[in-house]
Length: 222
Image (cartoon, rainbow, N blue to C red):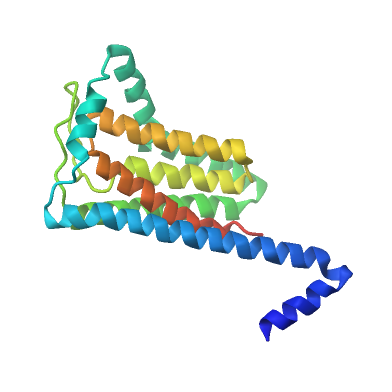
């Protein structure tokens, strides 16, 4: 019955725009659903061995291979990049954006960024506490982090944060690609500096895909 109604509407030239928009939204929903399923599958593939206490085969070889690239210049760059995913950068930036949106009366944008980012952070901390994976030994004499290792919050939360911003600003493909590059660099920096195993980072990326697949589709559509 629903399919017949859609065909009737699309048969009318006056409803051609509605038909195209409906098709685009359906495709968008399918893509998001597929992305969420893939993200959950990847996260589960990382989480199940960790919960069982089993080693993940690529963790130590990848960690060692990345550490072999170490140099003073690269270490300085990675320390600067990893700061972009910390609360010392994200919170002040969010405060500035929220203040700007409040002055313009754009409270919806402020709500989306704050609730999306804080909910992602809450989930990350909950999973860390539940899974309880110990962190690897950090490199370069850095102070170890106080929280547990799985999943990587630096891989998860900033990707959600900047992904939501990209949706709010209706960013084009180049800016969305920049979000992916930033997430990749943040994840790499965490492994390079020794704060996380590679599987922690992969799990964080997977969660970010799941989060963004569902969150903007419901919240950012006008």
